[in-house]
Image (cartoon, helix red, strand yellow):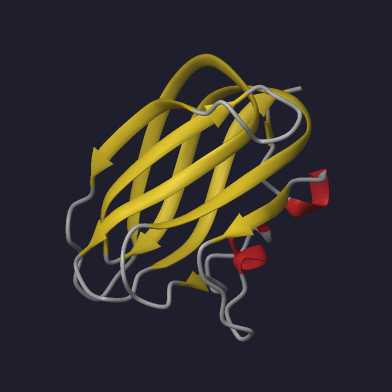
Length: 136
């Protein structure tokens, strides 16, 4: 199993609802929880990953801060269309440290993943890392 969400394996963030030059969305896939992407307020917020090949996923692990509700959608098309919901979760509020949440998937395949943060515990949220266990 490899972390298919790493930029070093060719994953890309092809869209984000907001961007700050000091905290770009590419920080989500650099493998480091010390760097992060931060929203610019208001909800929903979203970002989309594109993989170099179709990935068969077994687990998605997310490190974040102040995220309340998250929905994950997948697409198997080559152009990031026709998304379908694969997971939803309300995160526990963690004051002063990162939230860590796992989504178990049994062999779900995708070429794109869309992460939609529908609400937060504050006006601003951050996503520090998304790791995806899977095979190509």
